[in-house]
Image (cartoon, rainbow, N blue to C red; front, side, top):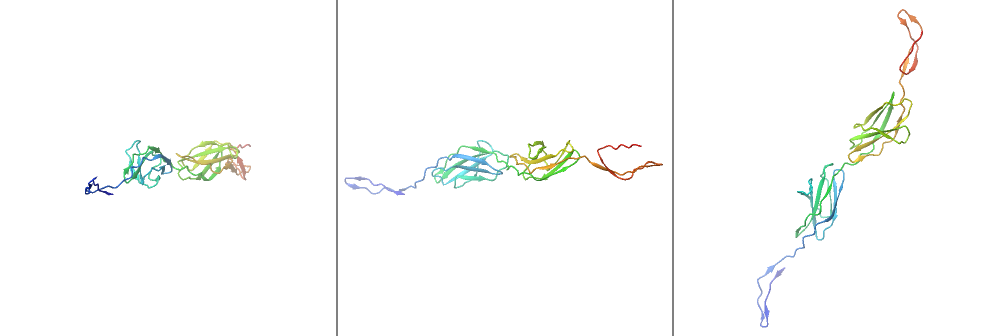
Length: 239
């Protein structure tokens, strides 16, 4: 807008003053309110209440509470997803509102620590019975850092965690031959524990040896011919 002013009295009106101009500007918007941060796997979701008169926002981040902050984005809407973060690191955020008049003060600070997703349940669990033991193996779960191996003597549980290996296999020893054992495995990381795998079962048994024999003695001693199965660990010979 351009302006001039003239003076008036009963004799008339003066000439115009020199011209001036001005461009009205909106007020600097208020600082955003209700900033919230939601942790995800390698990302942080941010949202806030829109500031009256704002045309955009400056999203600012720090790894130190209270800053200093670095502006990482300037969205035109009242939300933003920060995908440039590392799981397990705590981040601090503030947001300011911007328009043609300038930038508001920062919002209140929020903090959040992104975490990996809970891993999926292990698949392809297999149990192989041995003498007093059961060998277990399964397919590795993406994102898992360890596994909980769980056992029961009742189908369907309740299960007791007996080991937490970091690899996708485990041998359960010290078992009773002839008893059926039921197993499930879950995957674990810093975000939590998966659901259990499908259940498998196995029944340890003693090893069986085949003995060939027949009766008779020769100059070199007792000769054994024929065959029989031996269960156990000892064989007694009598004359």
